[in-house]
Length: 140
Image (cartoon, rainbow, N blue to C red; front, side, top):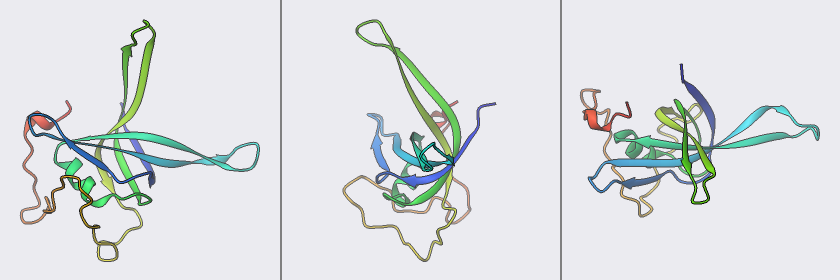
């Protein structure tokens, strides 16, 4: 079973892009403090890459700003390819399928103004509470 849950802080505003066929893809990095101290008595931090597909990426881009504390769930993915010199290269990331703000109240921090990214400002959970998802947007 490949399930991962992380809570930490955004290292930058969540980034939103669109594929040539118009599908949203988001990316960001979450800084997660380790739960133990090193030999110098300090906590170390891991910086973990995130990728999000579909409508969820638009929602996260509307709500996650640099420094925000948030949590994600998803699966760990390691991409492997051969470099030009024949060596293998590895890129580790979490493919996100859910997120939450563990300490944030909606009314306390409304989303900040659009900073130039193409963002969707509608609430996908308004109304019926259901989201239309095209099976082409699913990562499996």
